[in-house]
Image (cartoon, rainbow, N blue to C red; front, side, top):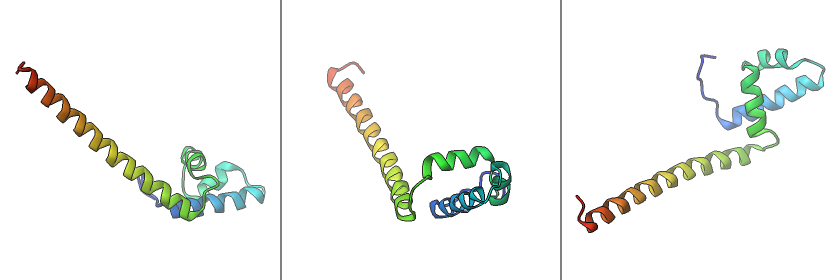
Length: 93
């Protein structure tokens, strides 16, 4: 796959399950990573983030991360507006 290709959580979980099966059969991690088409670094990162999750849990995790980012942006905008109004009210503009 081309560098930077994004995988959906469902694809990641299926690749991790495939890797677990191959590791159980006695293959080494570099061989398994080559077979599933990712680097070792990506494999370990995926395992850390998605290891032990089911498909529905992974989807929910991504939805919550997206919502959290949106709420953080809203909070930052609100704080900026508050600071601007505070400065305007003090007359130091």
